[in-house]
Image 1: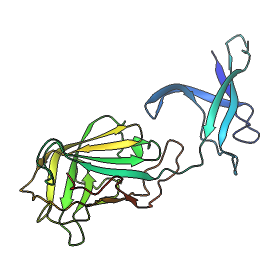
Image 2 (image 1 turned 90 degrees about the vertical axis):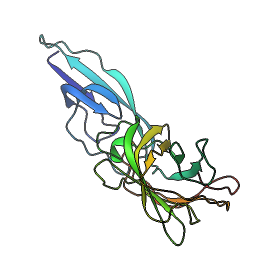
Image 3 (image 1 turned 60 degrees about the vertical axis):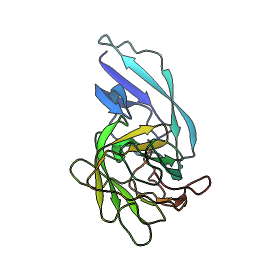
Amino acid sequence: MSSVTANVAALTNGSTNVALSAGTFAVNGVTYGYRSAQLTATNPQAAGTKAFTVSATDAAANTSAPQPFSAVVDNTAPAGADVQVLNGDSTPGKAETGDTVWLTYTEALDPDSVLAGWTGASTTVTVRLTNNGGGDRIQVRDTSGSTLPLGTVFLTNTGYVSTTRDFTGSTMQQVGSVIVLTLGTPSGATGTVSTPTNATWTPSSVPDDAAGNPCRTTGVTESGPADVQF
């Protein structure tokens, strides 16, 4: 092939013969062999499936028939849907190695918007549990100590820790629309809480979905009956 072009007029007005360059390009874990320069989509753009075609020309100037493809326009921002702080078969009400925190979104996030280079596979993080008078709090940090944009989980109760505890060697994994945090080794002693509550979670606006829609920051309350966290 000497050239590849695309007709994406349904997405960008007038773009009927856009040149595509060969290479290796990865988006959300999928590798592609061609891409265009950055294009500006028609605005406003109605949500839904849009058709486009791709044609190839060989060295003898023979051009293939246009081949059909489609793209989905997504105008809906992701948001928090649920939060669960679960016991990992250890002491109920006590933050320990193996306990998990489940952050459920309304759709899958682009993992790279949470942590640069992350594909969603299990990766090492630090889960920080902070003592707070209005309810102990959970945040997540990368291996360099920078806070990741996953927002803050409020345990709506105190006593899980008396001071800040870092659970080093924790893991973070994306499963569909859920980010699962598994606690590693705590930096010190943790307490045991017996009063049942429902945790709350305030997501960050920094992560976005595959279409680049930033996350909404509306708070979420743990579904189900009140229970002890962890």
